Length: 134
Image (tube, rainbow, N blue to C red; front, side, top):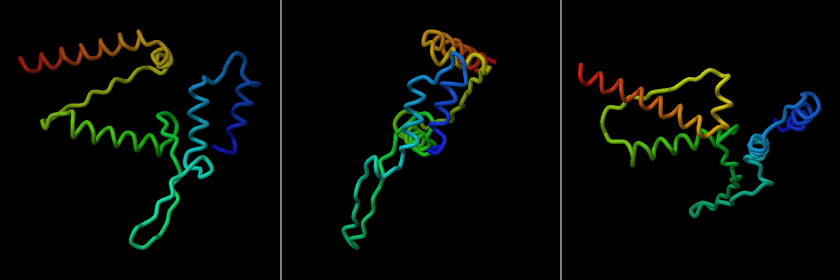
């Protein structure tokens, strides 16, 4: 990725008419490339017992492209949900999958995404009520 990011930018700017990368995509890509690079900042850790030292590079903390940071964030979120939010009862997970053509509109139009989320939640609740009655 580090070797080809500038090539990607050039291709988008010169090769695609009217297409561009949104600022948040560029920021995520730049963060991903910089993630774990010691020259971007680090913590110096040292064991009190054996005095062994270790440099730990700062992460990008991205929610977009960085698999390391995204994986860590998902794990932390799961632990938080299981520990503090969800009751200790059987749960069912529902996943809404949408056609690829609708995803960009939903990503950029907050009101549209809200409407789709409400319709989905209402549908799941109706199904749950029906299954309890019957």
